Length: 188
Image (cartoon, rainbow, N blue to C red; front, top):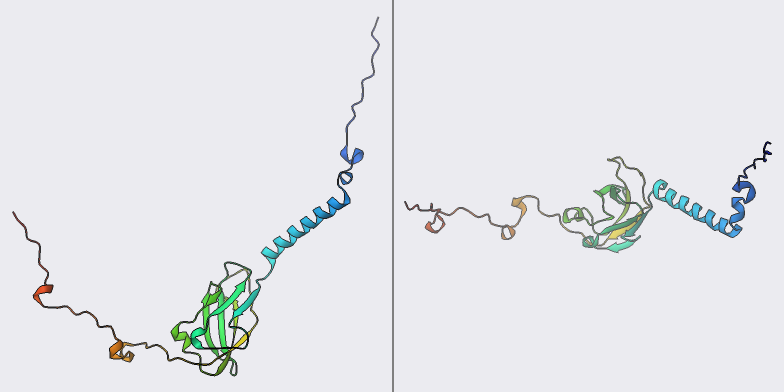
């Protein structure tokens, strides 16, 4: 006798999409939170990598009156590794008074540059990206005004212009016996 054949069972495959859809596993509130997190990440990355730098001029403040020795240009930038150019112009003539390249977020003019500013004159300043090198960003800041209430003389540029009492004497070779070079003696 032959054995009766048993029907082979058909395997049941579980398809999560049909049996328990993914959307049913999260509440609507959880989906909203997840969507907000994704949106914030996209915005943060976009802001960091795509947005232009934001420049905020801090000092000198708009319409500030200050002495030329107190000139200390400061600004804030939301980007790093940027080469800046600071330009200062005379307000009445729009003549360029000073132009300086820096990678810092501030610049204090040296005595020579301070001498470019005249007493009771109004100036304006701005910061821009350095056009002389290739950078990811090109920008120009707002403009701020200030007034200088004193001036200074430029520093001397040659020795002849330096008063004798301020000159540092250069040491001269001496022929005195105390300054003679004596060769070491050799004992054989």
